[in-house]
Image 1 (cartoon, rainbow, N blue to C red):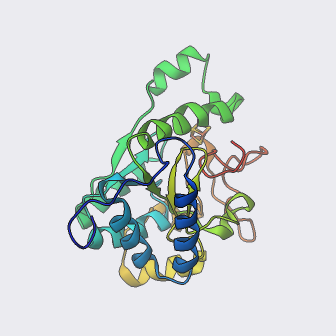
Image 2: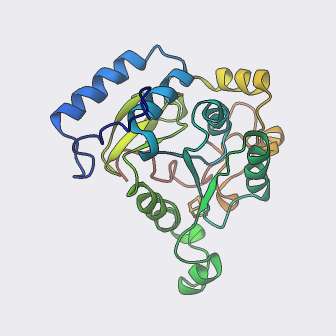
Length: 251
Ligand code: SF4
């Protein structure tokens, strides 16, 4: 909601799949001016601009937990969701409960149409072994598309230095894949800066991080990494796959 208590106008062009020229200009202008802002300011801007049509997705990484920490003080009623593929670590799901106890934000577990048992039965076994791109499409991308159809903007916890696909992520921009505005309050933060804030603010985090897991996704597709490896080397290790497709430019 705006400071005056009125709902902001829906972004022109959001429903049509492509932004209007006016919205494109607004997003570019805001992104430039928010580049030097702290994440709480960026979150507050997104809340004021999109009100209840703003959502946030989290895989419960340290960045997402930090955004929830700020969101709890700014707009705790924001719809926050997790892509609950059915393959997540027990520690990840437990973190959802710890965050709910600490911040009062109940992250909604958004699930695919088919249970893991039905999905694996229909495909002759787990697709993450034979066709992980299809598995991510069915159990992550289809779900996020379904959820974002109800919103005008989503907030994500990506950082530019995580991967080449994320290197040019604006603070605020149009997400062509999902037809909504994408807000990335931590786009220009580093991993070290995130962990400094997590420790300073005593934000709950996944205990797997203390056991060598740096980037954590589904259990079958995540391993701990060793010193010197890239922070996403433990994701789909041994394959050419580096992204689930949510934040890549080409999926
Ligand atoms: Fe499937 Fe692995 Fe993708 Fe999870 S990360 S949806 S298990 S392929």
